[in-house]
Length: 251
Ligand SMILES: Cc1cc2nc3c(=O)[nH]c(=O)nc-3n(C[C@H](O)[C@H](O)[C@H](O)COP(=O)(O)OP(=O)(O)OC[C@H]3O[C@@H](n4cnc5c(N)ncnc54)[C@H](O)[C@@H]3O)c2cc1C
Image (tube, rainbow, N blue to C red):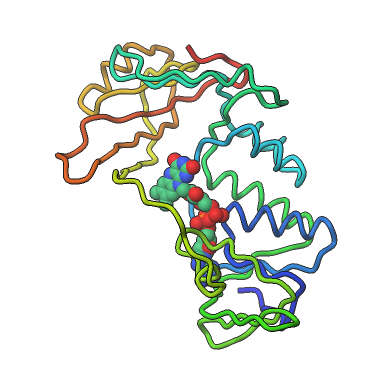
């Protein structure tokens, strides 16, 4: 646990990708900023594994894009299949950007890279500190923590996710709707004869058949997911992505 200072210029609440990017950027610009998170450590799962061109353009400013591209899988054409059927193909190769593709990289890796940029700028994540209250006055903000402590800041920024305490205390509504479907995701390693250059999709019962369709060999890092709409029966389809060589065009 890092001791919290009593005051700071900018208090950034929540050390997910948004908070880490902001804190790293502020520190790089010489702004006094404190980043805290209620979790004792960062999550280790893939979650937002698809990073788009605009994000890569933006994260270039904090110096994270080079390593992201190096550690991710470049996918200029994204294909989703079910058995022998192509369900969906999305082309990214013609985008007017330095990054004409989508990048597959697990969110925990993205966070690790952003944390590296924060450390390089002399910052840390203060854990575990939970903000439970926030009061604004003419000169700034006072945040109250779950342990009863307080920290004073000129500004507070809520990067504390979808159930944002900061947003609630700032009186900002969460507009919009939730999707009717729910999703089940699993991060798994599959030891199968998978193609090195394509994205695959298979039904849960036919993974081995899909493997035969995508022969290449090796251990693939894959991420099946299953969509479970409302009250419908258990999952009937899965999608997974296999490793593609950087620069390769998935078929
Ligand atoms: C299982 C799962 C699968 C997902 N899959 C995808 C996907 O396929 N594609 C996609 O685009 N997105 C996906 N997401 C969503 C994606 O992870 C989020 O959009 C992304 O993490 C948002 O980043 P963020 O920095 O805004 O907030 P978060 O990553 O949610 O970070 C918020 C941080 O704030 C901290 N925090 C919260 N409240 C407080 C408080 N009061 N005090 C201090 N700290 C606090 C939390 O501990 C957390 O570390 C998935 C999410 C989950 C959970």
